[in-house]
Length: 111
Image (cartoon, rainbow, N blue to C red):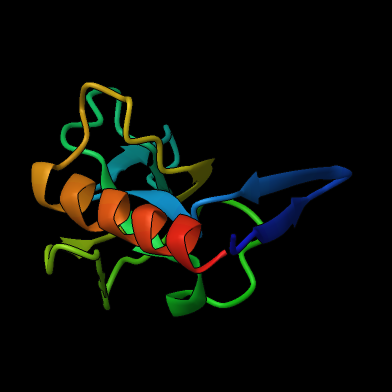
C-alpha cells in the first residue's frame, strides 16, 4: 500500500491512502491595521481529496490564493490540509469518495 508522509514541525502526518483533505475556499481575515490574511474557514463545506503526488512536499496547511489545484473529482480547491482524507467522514465529496475507495481497493489487490 502506498504511504505518503509529510512533516509539520516535529510531527509527521501519514496518509496511508495517498490522499489529503482539501477545501474549496478559505476565509480572509483582516486586522485593525488593514492587513489581510487567510485561514481555514469555520464552515469547511465539502471535503475533497488530493493525491499527495500532485502537491509534492507538504509541510503544513497550504492556501492557494491565485492558482487553485484540482481535487481528484475535478473541483478546484484552494486549501490543502495536512490531514489524511478519510472516506468515513460525513462531509466527503461523493465523487472523491468513489475515486479514493477504488484507489484503495486496487492498492490492496496489487499488494
